[in-house]
Length: 320
Image (cartoon, rainbow, N blue to C red; front, side, top):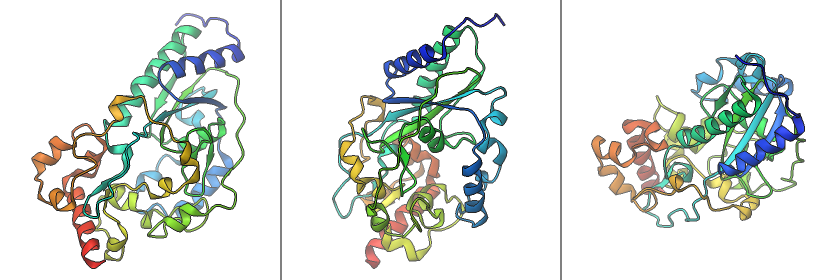
């Protein structure tokens, strides 16, 4: 490999952020690649309490999850980016409509984000004259919200989502972990204050204390990550028609008054995403499921899991 071109860490960081904006990212921040000691202790406690439900993958690669230098050899910087996905369309208000988290209304964000992250990586590679690193979008042991917080892109709110004062929380997070020294950004302070709207609004009480969520009670977990178990009957009346994910804690957050409509057309809703009734969902077969949700995050639930969610939501409506 040829020798790297000389570069200034400040100028390169500035130009990198400019390129990220050109690619459609709404924010870009940089932090130093180093072990997450405080976060590692909190994560270990959370895991030991069984708050992660059946997500056994969170127990694996603990060292890599809390130390980026073990994930990418020679890592020096973590570049975090935000990609807005808010569509400007409200969730269905009909009492019979099945609700899908708005992040899943359009094309799978993993592909869209990685396409742009690879473009950012390639630009940096050409600018510097050869770099090593990897791009991550919610698909490896990376604590993306922590790195975004450290990079000054927001703070982790009481609902455990990242919040940004300029745009709220309806965005995806991605990272480049690279072996390049860049000027870093300072974290911002926590602006949640005394607000408890997300805690008060959660129908299942999943936010068991500020800044901590019990996955076993979270509607998003119950309808997505919970791959093996039935949704406990006690939660059926509290599903409020959610059949894939849940946006309640984000919808009630005051900071989302600043949400922005996405410019990424691939995140716009597919036909039927916002106006299909629970009864109509209950009638689809596996072929229609595959066609309707092709290349969207909803396919992650798989047909049997999705139908389980639909039937639980219908059960909750009847019991309510």
